[in-house]
Image (cartoon, rainbow, N blue to C red; front, side):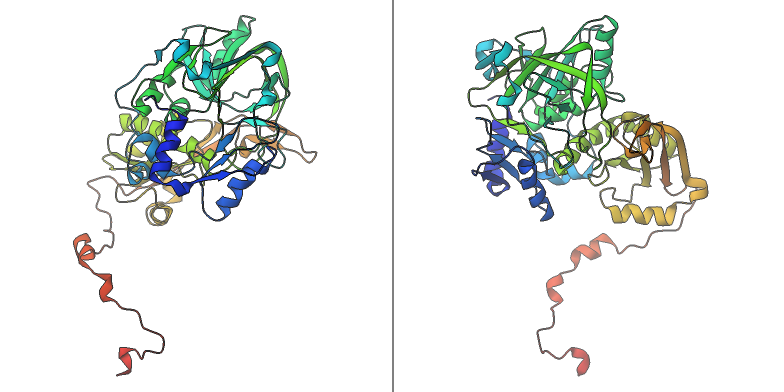
Length: 477
C-alpha cells in the first residue's frame, strides 16, 4: 500500500493510540485549533489532534501530526533514540527513489475536481493560528514548481496568507529555490505555475523541506525518506506533477508583477517578522479526495520547529561529514532552531572552522550560532554542551564572529532594524562560531572526571533503600 497521511495515522494509532486525540465538538478555525495544541503544550504534551467539525467547512482538520520524535521515528522507520542522537542523515542517503507517474484513475487526489469559480479556498478549514496573525495561513502546504531553465521539479514548504476565495500570498526568502524559480519566470514576463499539496505522510514533508543541493531533488529525497517512490499525477491546469496520494492539491499561478501586503504571521522563532509586499497566487483549480483531510502545522509551536529542525539535522550531517569525516553527531535544538551543535572527533585544529562553515552554508538564512564540541560531549544534552563551553572555550581565542552573515530581512528579528514608529528596514546580522573543543593531538589536555562505565552499570540502586517515615537512620546507633 502506498504510504500517505492515512497509513501514517494508522501506524501511530497502532503504536500509541493515546497520542491521538479526537475533538468532536465544533471548533472555530480562527485560533481555536491552535489553542488545543497550546493547551496541551503547557502540560508538556504534543498529541495529534483530529477535529471532526470545523466551522465553515465540511472537511476535518488534523494538526500536530509530526510534533514528537517518537512519531517522526515511526514515519522514518527508526528508533526514537537513534533519531534524537543526530548521528546520521536520517535515512536520506538510502536508495534514491525518483517519483513515478500514475494514471488519474489511480490518484486519490483526483476524486473531486473543482475549477474556475468552484475552486474556493473557503471550502477548506484553514486556521488563523496566533493572536496577531493577519488572517488564515496554509502551513503544511508543499509548494511544487518547475524550473523554467532546467525543467526540474522543485518542492518546498512556504507560508501562504489566504486573502479570499481565489487569492493568497506566498513568501520566498533567502536561499529558497522557489523564489529563484519565481524570479526566472518574472524575467520572462510570465506567470509562474504552482501547485500546493496538502495532507501527506510526514516523510514526504521532510523530503520537501530537506536541503538538497541545487534546484529539484526533493521528490527523490522524499522517496528516500519514505523508502518508496512518491507517486505523482499530472496537474489539471499545468504540466506540474503533484503527489497522487495527497489529500488536497491547490493549483494556481504566481501572477507576474502582482504583489499584496502579506502577514503578519508568527514564525518559528516565536516573533512576528517579515511581511510586506509579496507575490500573489491566483487559484485555478482544487482537487481532493472524496473524504479529504486538511492537514495543518501548528505555527510557532513544537511541530513547526521540529519539522524544520530534523530535516536540517540530516542535511547538516551530510554536508559537514563531507569536509570533516570525524563528525559524530548534530543537534539543532527545537527550543532554539537558530543554533547548531556539532560533535567531532578532532584531528586538526582547523576541523572546527571547516565543520562550522559547512553547517552555516547548509542553512545560511537561519543558523546564527554554531557550537563545536568534542566527541565525548552529548550534543543532545544542553547541560553537556554548556559544560564544554564553560571548560574548553576561551572567548578571546575561540569565539569567531562572522559579520553580516544572516539577512537582510527574513525570519530572525535580528535581521531587521526597528524604529520608534513601529517601522523596520532589513539589515544583515552576524553569526558566531563557538569552539568548545580541546586542542588537537598531540597536545595533552586535562582529563575529564569519570566513573568507569562498567562500574556504574554494575550498581543496583535497589540496594539503596530510602528511609521510611519515622525511621531512625543508622547513624543514630
